[in-house]
Image (cartoon, rainbow, N blue to C red; front, side, top):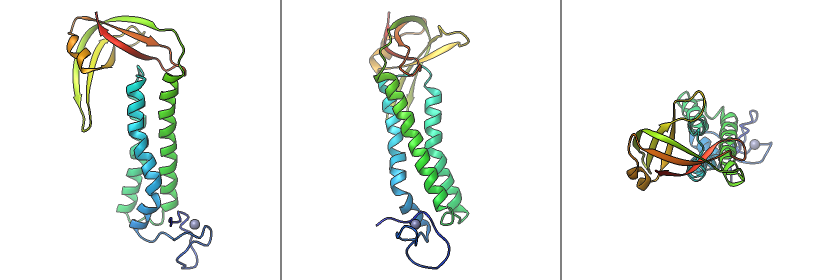
Length: 196
Ligand SMILES: [Zn+2]
């Protein structure tokens, strides 16, 4: 039994005259009404991390920022709305915000996955010098990153995510090679980073 997100005004009935579902009356009802959309939104984030880990885009930052923005925007709206006791009144708007952000996040996941999985472009080997390396630790995973001099115009460095073994084998000032692909959707991606 779902909750109505119309929050239709009018007669004080328990059920919505438009869709027949139970009307939202409390913040708890709002959270219940948003539950499935929130689950999809929550699934979109690890989906994005998995797609990026599998088909590494060279310009990963805008992908991560977009993903986090789409994830947090509706959550922030709901918390803000609830803090001002407007969430019951705004349930329809909140439901749309959760749905559209969840869809856009899944589209972003699919874009990264399609860019890699459908990519039939030739591989170009790039060699570059390591200028920095660092480890990032998150709650669920540890990332190993090697920063190299960029081969692209207008850019100084490129950050390549590597495995722990490759990370250990690289040294600052040393050379690494990476296999670059154009990407099915034109998002350049790399694989096979190894020290020379
Ligand atoms: Zn309804």
